[in-house]
Length: 279
Image (cartoon, rainbow, N blue to C red; front, side, top):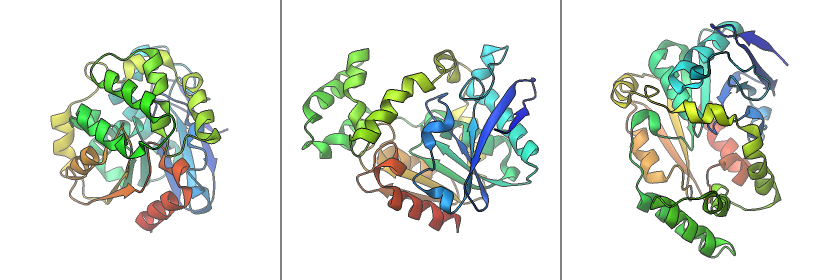
């Protein structure tokens, strides 16, 4: 397992798998170990995936300063990885909450990004509003699922500010296009693979400057791909279409019947979308 040292001395780890040009992958969670990304549906047949364990997650060390878990402060860890790898520019992928880190990195280091891929991205860094109706509308097409009634009721309560741990557990099937054994295993591992202390710090005050980030992204002259899931409650297609509009050269692809983990829902469709974009 390769490692390198962050600017503050924290030992950070990453994982390399696959063949082809490198694609650096920033995990979501937030602050979940990168292992859940796996081979991104078989993308390792086309690209050499570099999965980064953010500080305090996976095989990376815990920092002395817990405030360094804040998203904007993680940007220089990503830049330290680039320097360690010895590349001038790279293709960068961010999933879910990791997309916040990816766009903050692109805003701060635009000359280091060749192509940017945002997979079912969180929108906190750019300040896009996702309404309760956006989330509810995204999942209504799943009405035929046996678990739908309880999950939908739980989602209504969550969007009205009445979420409880039990209600959050009830909506778990919505995070995947198919609530099968693989999806259930990934969901069961979620809590254990997250650094809960870091989760509480990731988006605290000062982490994001939406106006400043939007201004920087408007000048980002590189190809950008945003992958949305047709039935994703976390990153509904309407909001991701608005996100795409912030870039000069962005493409939006909505994966049919996809949810928040599109490489799990339909690996072939996801890999085809990504490889076509990367060329």
